[in-house]
Image (cartoon, rainbow, N blue to C red; front, side):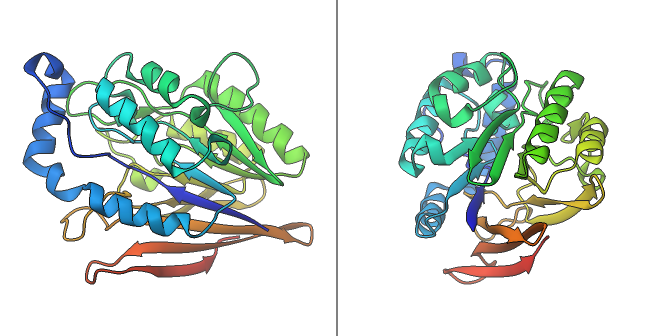
Length: 296
């Protein structure tokens, strides 16, 4: 049996002191949004408590599906690197980036350099994404939907080149008998698409999964717990989202902070995967197991 943990949308806080020169372009609107709204809804105390609880689970591997930072300022990227190192060793953690990690041009490249092996793995060629991490019979395949966008947009992008690489990886890992878990920050299912924050290329992503199959898809971005599915090769593939790890109780839009834990094991010629969701309720101060269900 392999245990896989999933956490997302870290949004490390507090926001560092910034000057007006730091807030050119999109960072200005993001900073105002943080000051007017997000600083009350995302906080470090909630995140620290959730991570402490997660670490007691001793998961074999942890998937972090993006948005470690807010405006992708250099200080934020460095702080996120320290946070990852405190979370655990890089051989047991993989990061796929979110739109905030690529908030402005050059930010994602800075994050790749600073976060190092947390955002690296086996690849088909010189392209960074998708990369693969293998733990026993589990293959974690990390894609990237993170691209810089104009102000007031939080869209992601999945292009044909990445689709081709993902398809080849899924084929190889499937033939080798791995439990293939695909990470992508933006949800690929049609129910959660929107012109201002959806995934451009979501149909392309789904076509790759339909052709080659996968066992599980994990995403963040919505700040909500969710379970959907998309067609795979001969079977529906579960698509699981998780609430933001720093989301405080009492927010009007987001679910309170949560993480998911998947227990994966062979079942005859197939797989058995049981998901447990841990986190805060809207009322009460304790982290509890909110849900347990078999998803495949």
